[in-house]
Length: 447
Image (cartoon, rainbow, N blue to C red):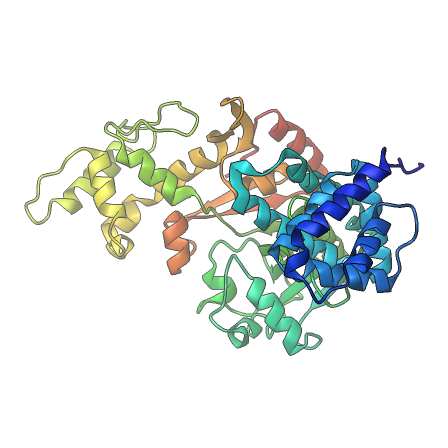
């Protein structure tokens, strides 16, 4: 398809000159004419050369005002022309790395500007996203398996620094995850950026589902016999570059990760996750803070005091008896729950540990399957799960397999979700059907 030429190039050139003039005093050591010429080349149909890119880089890196001027120049051009410019930059640098960097800079600039950011500048985000979706598609992504034998220290450090789900205190602690034969890390790299993962997934191989994090990276981890392993557990998916937000790298990673495991470990038959529920604690605390507790993100009533919905009469009796041992009077169930869950060691009390299991599982199920995001523009309920991790896996065709009570005792796990975790199941033949159901608002829950 022919590239659309910008209308009124003379006007665009004047905008370029004006933008450079406004920032000239901040880079007196730079040759103004060479900068104007180099930046103007981007807006023409001439091929830009590495030397011109060097001038542009010097201009761009000389200060915040120059960065804003560069983006102002781009925002004055038609979308197809900007996409062409990105292709020129990619070709001149033989890598998309600088484009990723400046996309992250643009996000920072827009965040600082807030509501004052020009709409044309905001429109650049969509152009970046569409461009990256093309050059980071499956055709250009290379799958790599990282293990204890083939992972350099520098790569290990890079991966450990980007771990956002189950971070290790030091990179050498993270290395322990690769020293076990039942643990692997699979990454995707752009073919022009070798040994720089843009996304990676951590995988544990096991016999059957793993329902607690301690069996993967904790004290209860026992090395699985790979001859008997039939299940791959994806327990942490991480993107590494903020400039690549919005192009579904996580979904691509799940697909490629599964393909790699099917080829390398043909005896693995089942694929699942052990995933956090990062918004659950904040949600439940908000539910319990209302009086009566009828808050819900979808504005539908959820009353934890109602017997039989989440708590049986027997469970309420046991909870009340445990809390009144010291002669304290029992209040409404919601008041008792606030007291229990507000204590860091509530699960160390055997009666509460047992009585809270079924209710916490049911409350989590409600949160994952019933609570939906609200469209900020229309203020109406969407079909997407409120929990961001749930939305990611369910939109990729997974179903809810097992909701796991106190599955993550780490400080972060308790802070985010009272230790609750979930296994999402990836069953190849059912994925497309699950996607259709999810788009219509239905969540497939097998728990």
